[in-house]
Length: 92
Length: 92
Length: 92
Length: 92
Image (cartoon, rainbow over all chains, first blue to last red; front, side, top):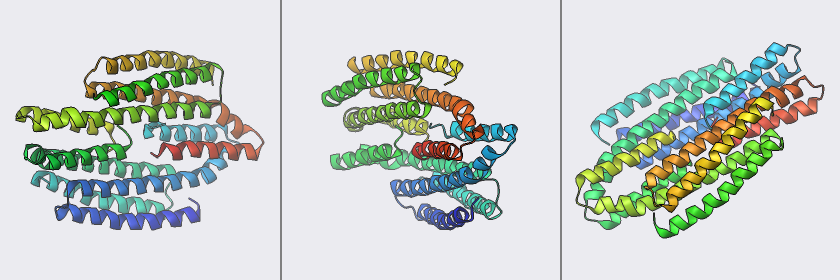
């Protein structure tokens, strides 16, 4: 991953660990169900955002690298991998 | 939340805290982007599952409770709240 | 469904039939892949919106009706059904 | 799009037009709300599947083509476009 993206992702993951602990405490303290669900969703959305950052960096480095490389196999593998990510997102 | 659901959710949240720390470590150690994305997705799916458990318990307790109650206002509020959860899921 | 919701849904479904035919024509005319994908997504989002309208009407009529009814079985069935919709949305 | 993918997509789009008309008829005939929602979801899932086919073909032709091309600008544009598709899927 590019250093800038790595730093940003680690910052977010640190924050998310705290967020998740907060949700756990809400469950322990019998917070209102809907409020817990909303906080869990906030964590989910933040994780999607981290994945977006990682994928953006992946495009800028690994994918571009493979595209410029001379190995047709490497290019095909890279494409297959990206396609896999789309397929499993179940949301193209 | 019902005690059984609460216990199950807490168990899962504990596990997820460890999982999230593991993903953070993957980022620190420059693991392959696609592998990190896949692990983050596993956490996301597990959080959706926790939300499903919480909502199931919410239906069994609060929603049924309001439905049997005599307050029409409380029933309407409950319905509006549930509808809100659907709308924000953006995936009905 | 409530008459207002029904009318609105039918209007949207009519429009969507036209939209879908348009996307089909794009495919026939070898439009650019990404443009086709975007149009299909517009149809998908519009269908989610129709489902939201239907579910909103369902809450206002059937769900409220069952909640006020005296049949505990009917209430439980209704809740189970709603929970099923959430679960299959895979996106709570 | 590759001929095989194009043919398959057109077949599916044709079927989906009929499916959509069927859902419209359900609404006209006051079918049960939850049943309508489920049919609309089937259409939505089928449209995601069509998009998956189109994207797969896009990878095999346009993206591979740009990757092998000598234009660094074209490669970057292609990557930016793909990244855009991921970001708007809101589900990486």
